[in-house]
Length: 363
Image (cartoon, rainbow, N blue to C red; front, side, top):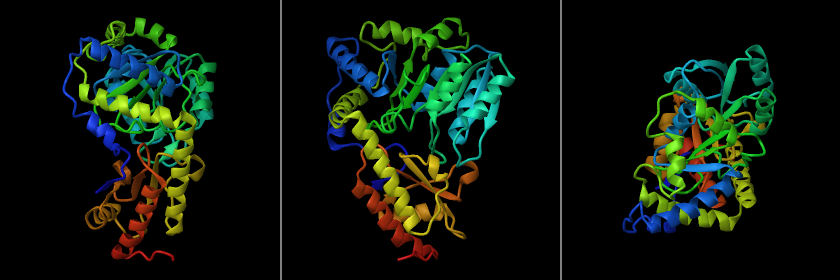
């Protein structure tokens, strides 16, 4: 069975084998050395000189941590959303009492930096901007550098969900003025779910000092104090730390720019393969993601049935559409431990599966 969803993603065999090692004392010397090495390499991948913390949770946990550590109930927040996960970010902020202004973009389109400018012009009291860099639900990557330039001009906090982009698509945390950035282990990092990583810069620390949203497990102050002792405040997922150490060594060997170039090739190869079958991309190709491709289901074919057929008869697991896109699109994940051959296999099996559902595939 081949897993081609946007996450969790396949893991290299060496990464899986690393998880079989015996436990160690997470307050001892061995773990101290492990977290030192991992944190240093994560900073390189984040392209930041700021702080990076490892949380034992899913990516959504890191999104919540990003919000509760920088905001207070009643703070005005601008949400820029073009999909399910952008909406989730706004929902988290509202749940903790923020006053959220939602600027929504058509699903399949990128976030428009000019719209962010207009919203910030309209309400000077906005404190922070929430943005999803790579919207997994629609296969769209927005221009975070341009968005960051707008947010910096207005001197607001920029809080970024980079769960399905960081480690695959260029994201320059410091250069682009990102104050808090969250990502998750099960995406481009090639390890199982269970860890999330978050970067925090000096502007974010200043906001943290005033933030009054409730937090305990997610408290960045606790993360900072314990990392100074080369520990985590709460029991970490030790096995996934083992896996991450191996995966980061593999990524370091490949090189950051080579990783970005590989994902760009994979994204283009997937899009070309989809179009060769006469299918249409859901995302505007100008902003199509290099980590996940969303494809419109052919007329008369429920994408749920297509995903089921490809899995049961062809051994490949694809993702369906979410929310209002359920049954209308399917998604191909091509991030992390993926090669050109893997992409070609997906296209080949789709060519075999689609005619079984009544779609005539061009030669």
